[in-house]
Length: 169
Image 1 (cartoon, rainbow, N blue to C red):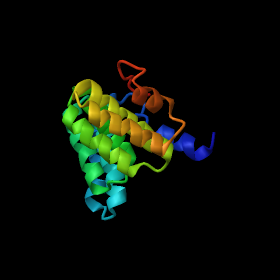
Image 2 (image 1 turned 120 degrees about the vertical axis):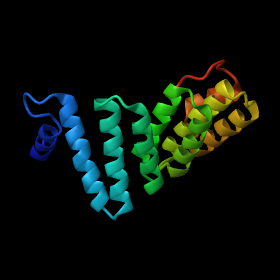
Image 3 (image 1 turned 180 degrees about the vertical axis):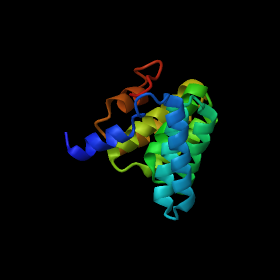
Image 4 (image 1 turned 180 degrees about the horizontal axis):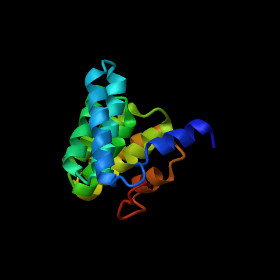
């Protein structure tokens, strides 16, 4: 393991004896202060993502985390970690309309055909299973196959061989 990874990992752990919530709130304040000074939108997005992760995972404040992730995605639409976090929270909250919009952004921001196909399969499953849009789902599966002809999930979904979509296909 590279030394820099060990140092970074140690810095993300609370000091011995300090309650984790106190550390998380302290770290969130430090990140917010750094964010206030930052002018680069890409770095702002990364800092907002860190705030979202701290807020969600260490403090259990999902609504606030959702706001941080959303703002990160607005500052830098190509910052996919924020989009993935938003999609996860929206899926858990069953906010299907917001999830559909986030999946569309993931499709647009995909770097490879495989990534694009995966997001399109997720979109197709949402359209089919939750929103009752069979035609939209079929279109998403077709687009997934155009992006990655070897995508088995898209192939099966398009052919109607699977009754219910499986998340993460």
